[in-house]
Length: 327
Image 1 (tube, rainbow, N blue to C red):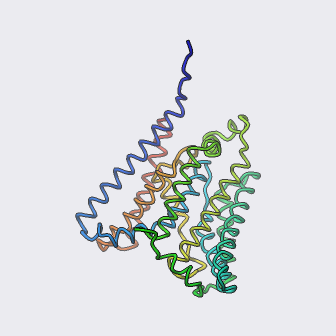
Image 2 (cartoon, rainbow, N blue to C red; image 1 turned 30 degrees about the vertical axis):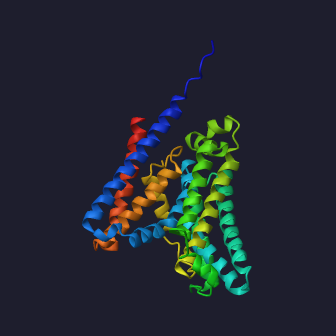
Image 3 (cartoon, helix red, strand yellow; image 1 turned 90 degrees about the vertical axis):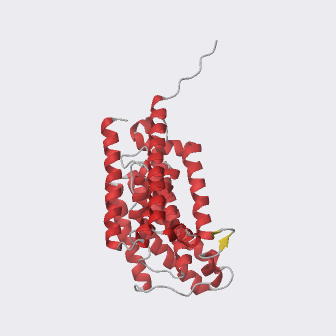
């Protein structure tokens, strides 16, 4: 008679918490959608829904990378600066070279910028005792400064027509930038939940010392997580540049805070070891719905910022409370 291996209680508990988190966020999202639909009938119009989804597509891409980082108990504050730097350098290459290959070359340059910043973040975080908060705050300042120096603080408008149209073209029903963000979210969720690398990310965030003693390449995987965040930030920069039809050195200012808020609202723990890409996408949608709905109701942007701040504080408090009671 063979005995079946017992399920890991820690894994079951983590899965249950993740399910409860995502269910709660989904419930709040549904309530908000119903409330805004009743208060502003145009909220559920097709044009407004597409506008809402387009407005959060870049934040969604950033949140995928931020999810991996936060699960390792880290944080990436450089994402917004990478958007600005990768956008202006990529757009500059496109405008300077021209021709059919200029778009590919510009995208390659933008991705290389994101990879480089992510690599610096990962190496310093993994191999020194400098906290990720300080490291990425430093690279935020450096990347922002380089973007301003390169452009003189001026936007870049000369972009290839084919690249401009990507921001508004639709592949079927939804615009291209929405489809790109959805596909990246699917790939991110599969990588996080269905691969050995994804499982090691959770292990590192839960207990890095135990993960190292178990033979996991902790430092290498931390570097990979930050490289992934940097590349996704560059992709976000490409999408934003195409969407607004220009590249601004300050285009990504504040986007990193939105991605962190989305992950935290979705149940990602700042203590590490917890979170999913799907739940982060729910957090992105909640932020988008909250902003779009309050816009339609005539709420000022200043008040919207206050509301979002309260939501984030509430989400962090719930996470902290959950840790104290050891759910």
